[in-house]
Image (tube, rainbow, N blue to C red; front, side):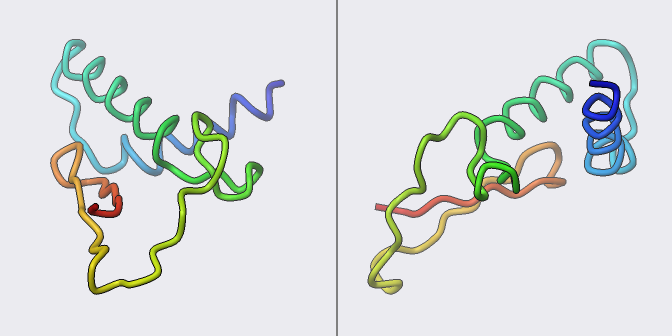
Length: 87
């Protein structure tokens, strides 16, 4: 169990805390909550076949890239980009 905890802490340090200057406890909580949402709903996980923890199956692949353009959402002061398909 200790190895799993160390892995998550290392991921948070590399992907988040090395990039953002946290200015106080309230800011730290807001940054942590935003990253937690990204980690569980959008970030791919290798052990789950590149699926986020809250998804059960891959979304349908776009057939015509001219009509299905990707939309980008920037979070955490543009540190992290999340992508989804436009309808």
